Image (cartoon, rainbow, N blue to C red; front, top):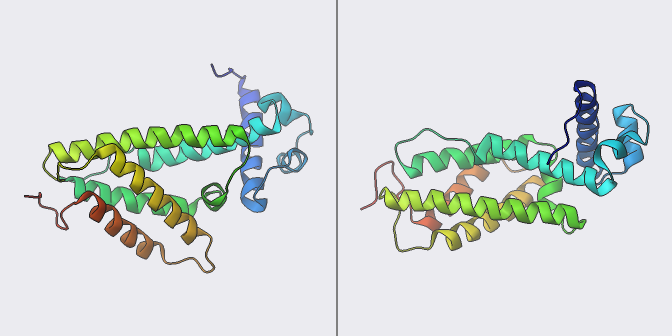
Length: 202
């Protein structure tokens, strides 16, 4: 159960979390003393709110995924067909990650502590479950072929698009986001067998 803080405590915790996010985006890692300097607080205060350095890292990673879920994963997109809705989702996903300074670090960073790995594994499993339900819905609606396993399909797609965006975000200069979105959508649509029009598949 998440601890309840006073309004002042919540504000201080959020300020430290924001400073830690900025520190990780700038340096690729988190050092508690550097975070405290960014937040303008004592070195001991991050430990009060997050327990350990690992707890602070976990909070930053969780917050990153929460923002991504709110902007893309849990959002309902307009469209009469699966093709229209999910093409909009892929575009929004690329836009969000291109605009989030922390995305290159989170998507490309390998390993890390057990807390970070546990959070990312949990989020991946959740994304696979949601994606499988999404594809199954498209199959029921007749927008997608019904002869493919939704869970296996979405697991393969997530692995591919995750890696592709990680590569795009670490290039200098970055490729144009609209081109990245278009190429990723072509991959996704091809993988699931979606029709390349707004009409339903036969």
